[in-house]
Image (cartoon, rainbow, N blue to C red; front, side):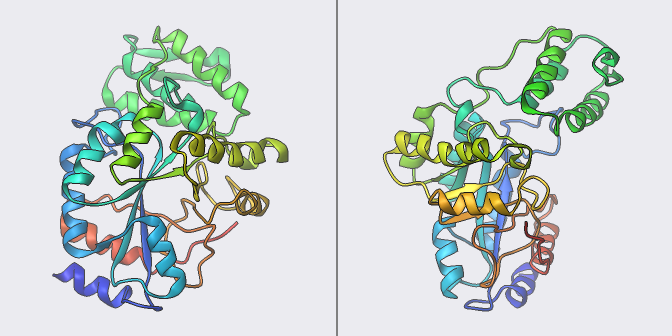
Length: 319
């Protein structure tokens, strides 16, 4: 009740309303010791229960249309997932259907059917290693303790941060070198299959594009960036046999991970709306091609709702 009252004041119905777009990546069947910040099925079930009890959860495309027309309901929320992990299909989808909620899944199409993102090569190598220390000094990094889960999480965070802004080829080379040192094989079952994407859509979920190879667009030349943006849409339209009009910028920080010219490319490619990872909520005056997203992480309904309500006040930076 408190959450509703607070959210009603900050996000009323109509033209003065606000749209909160939540962002998720994975939902594990059980708590994962390496990704302890990601929800498991029990936590995600609770989040959906909290949302449906205190907020109006809308499909993203409908929410965007109502945002533009000034007809949003009070406490409007949309749910999104990035990347295309298989647990979105096996774990998240049944819970969304249970709560009768539609989410939008932004798919990096180059990893469908057995692909693996560079960060997951790193993460799974660290997860599976039997070593207590990883000496990566020959690669220009450092030596990392990986004996406990806490050490694994800390080392993973440091290594991912060091590799993130490298050129894509070099980054993948470093990830595979780490995998070799850890004697870990590249996972081939982390991402969805094309058939699962089709089943997601058939179950009533929305599908959006997230480039092909999840690059930091600001690091690419213009032609490559355009191919990533338009190519992922083409891939998904071939899979689904329908128009794909929603896009999510990889990494998604305005003016850092993507720039103004990439927003123009997204519009030219035919997308009607796009989302970033700038925190905040969208208003009727928001740039429809740079909508902010946010996810509360609290473990109680009251704190979750109050943090979401507080986020509505934020005005995100644009590219």
